[in-house]
Image 1 (cartoon, rainbow, N blue to C red):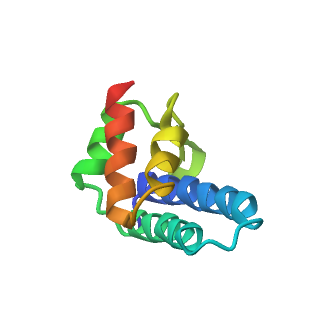
Image 2: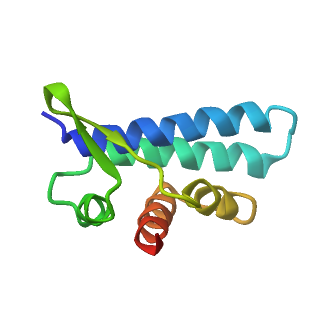
Amino acid sequence: MPDARAAALAAYLYQCAAAFSLSADVSDAHHVARAGMALLDAARLAETLRPTDHRLTALSEAGCFETMPDKEAVFLEPAGLRAAILRPLSGGQVSGNDILSAVVAAARAT
């Protein structure tokens, strides 16, 4: 059974990818498409994180998860996190792992 925190983080990143996709539809720039794919890659990576993964631990310690009934969790977006995720996407090539690292760094900074 997947970790509820991993599922919550993945759901958040999928939402970010969807929002990014909607705002990027007006552009035909290749870097915009790559950025959207990086967000999707980050979401897919998040789905596979093990309960002991240091990134989930760091996000838990930063208070980024709320436990819900039925052993589910919700990812709580700290202030400034969305900007920390989207800022690197506007520049060079970014990987899903880069995005996960940015999420953890931004959460620790709050």
